[in-house]
Amino acid sequence: MKRALHRLAIWAEKITHPLTSTSQKPPVIEPYLGFATSTGVVVRGRVLTGLRRTTPDPRHGRFTNFRQMVGLFLTDEVAGVRVRAISEDRSVRTDEEGYFRLDLPRAALKPGWHTIALDIPGQADSAVMADTMFTDPDARYGVISDIDDTLMQTGAYSVLRNLWTSLTGSALTRQVFTDAVDLIDRLHDGRNPVYYVSSSPWNLHAFLDNVLFTRAGLVRGPLFLRDLGISPTQFVSSTHGEHKGAQIDILFEAHPHLRFVLIGDSGQHDAEVYRDAASRWPGRIAQVVLRKANPRPDAAVDLALEDLRAMGIPVWTGEDYTTVELSNMQGASKA
Image (cartoon, rainbow, N blue to C red; front, side):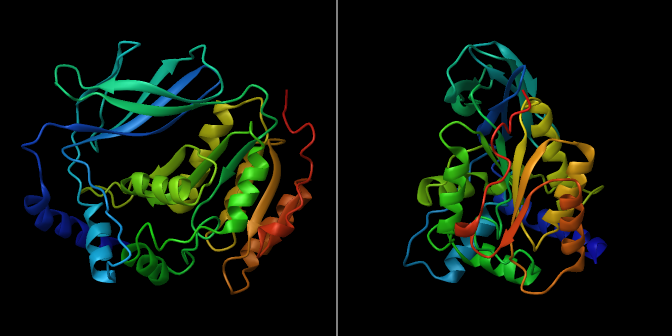
């Protein structure tokens, strides 16, 4: 099945590329939300030949929404372009999919959001501002949350339902759970960093930024999305579990002095991913919070939750975050 989908994706890309390519235009930088580490600052993004955005309107029907959402995936990435942090005069070249990660030395800035100017050297009018979050030194713990069916109603546990919801809706129709907004705000507490990990592709970064932060009012935090990686040699860069586990590792390494609250749902193997992370990082998980999203019982989820509890990690499960009890939060920081 995966091989057939791979061939279909390659075929579709070949057919649509001549119709969607904007290679005659100068490349542009699409910055992603960056984050700080214990030693520096990570600035991320992608270089494309043009930015694609949706224009949600309550009068739009499902076909218009579908056309706009599909358009987000018809990007033309640019490899080998040098992207520079202007103030530091440091640069890095984009990879084969147009992505870049620029690691900068830690600046003496106050906690919160700051902007870093980026440009493509030698190209006029290429400068953009990249937002980067500096962690508060008084943070007691960090928060890592899944998105689909954890914070936003999607139906990700059903492939067909997920595709229907994702491709025929818009930023106006996507529903973020109000109890999730309250829970994240409570956990953030004005100082604790919040990160969002999803298997959604990077093409949806601007869309999710709008839905989650601008419209729903969730605490803003860096998004860790997935490179679909459609090429002749690979279909997607990793599985859901591999991707999520790798991002958890990145964040744990970035904040060696913090323990983390992990939030997910029962529909996409989050319990197993968090159990495996607990095995790799003993003592680093302060609590696991899991929304019951899949209406069908899942023995693998129950077993993973039992394993987490056996490790001494508090676990909460339920259908409504209003009943979440936060355990072991006092002194959650390792330091």
